[in-house]
Amino acid sequence: MATLDGLLSDARTAQRSLARSTASERTAAIESVARSLDAHRDAILAANAEDLRLAPESLGAAMRDRLALTPSRLDGVIAAVREVAAMPDPLDEERSLGTRPNGLQIARRRIPLGVIAVIYEARPNVTAESAALTLRSGNAVVLRGGSEALRSNAALATAVRAGLSSSGLDPNAVSLVTDPDRARVTELLQATGRVDLAIPRGGPALMAFVDANARVPVIRHGAGVCHVYVDRAAELPMAEAITVNAKVQRPGVCNAAETLLVHRAVADALLPSLGRRLHAAGVELRADETAREVLRRAEVPSAAATPEDWDTEYLGLVLAVRVVDDLDAAMAHIARHGTEHSAAIVTADREAGERFLREVTASCVLLNASTRFNDGGELGLGAEIGISTSRMHAFGPMSARELTTEKFVVRGAGQVRGAV
Image 1 (cartoon, one colour):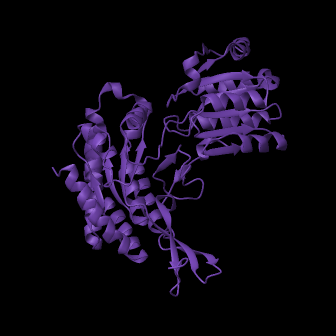
Image 2 (cartoon, rainbow, N blue to C red):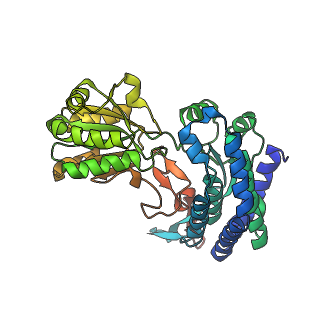
Image 3 (tube, one colour):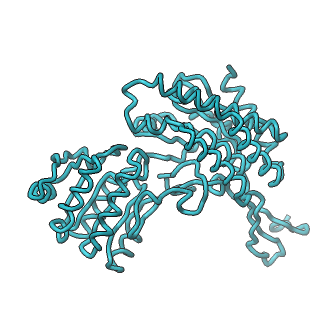
């Protein structure tokens, strides 16, 4: 087992080499990775089956769903890697800022961030997709997945590195920390000068650990307490369809809705029918007293919401429901309880919709659309390394371009500043 110091040293060397590679070389390498993943399909699926077999009961349905790599999901991972290969290359893009009065020509050029540590739970697809995106953007990546996916991640990393070797690029541009000791996570988070950025993807416990221990720059990909607000001017069939999709289509992901806010003026008209549809889909409703009374009259089961429900990312078939007086109350609730991930309004009132889009702070705000669209592929970015809930550097889905920065490029003809 390679030491973490060794992995980081090798990653830095590989990143410098990768930054010197051409766009066509990086494209060929990513295509080689996709072919290698396909060639290693049986080993990857067998490793994942073993992870699922050994997963503790305490893992929970949502985490187990994230852990599972079915043949069709693996096909999706390979397709995502090929999609990254087809992306425009973000590196060496240069934009002119003009010429100064002294003749200096000023520009900015896009460059990699460096060595990126990705720390994540359960989802083995992150291993392959993070590798592809960091290769596209000229970064090296050190991956540290959860112990529950150790075998899956190892099989995926082996395939990725084999693909890199076949392409002629340094395989150490992608490394996996296989030591399950959490001390390795602390070391990554405190590897100042050796890790340029840490990207954690996980639940509140992981984020709290990162907050307490990080010394390197961090872009959080945190919890999604996502909201749907149904305004008084909403078209109710649309509101029903959006809410059901946002909650039910895939409840174990971060862009699924966790709280439904309903304007008081439409609660009686909306909640009985919507409540029946959600209940039929297996959703447990945890409602405030006003919503519970409407649901009770419609004979739709619900439980009393507790204060904790408004702040909970359920990642399952549970939905908190609150009746609010107006748009201001809805936005105040989102500001207090949301995690700046995704928030949607359903309304035919253009002014109310535009105000919501302007005033609600979230990485993605949506008008008359499901929160499930806060996704790199759905937004036209392609594969993503995650959805940033940090406002610094990147906010929302992070694809290859968001894994770069810009440096100033100054071209002169002997200019000096001031008197010598």
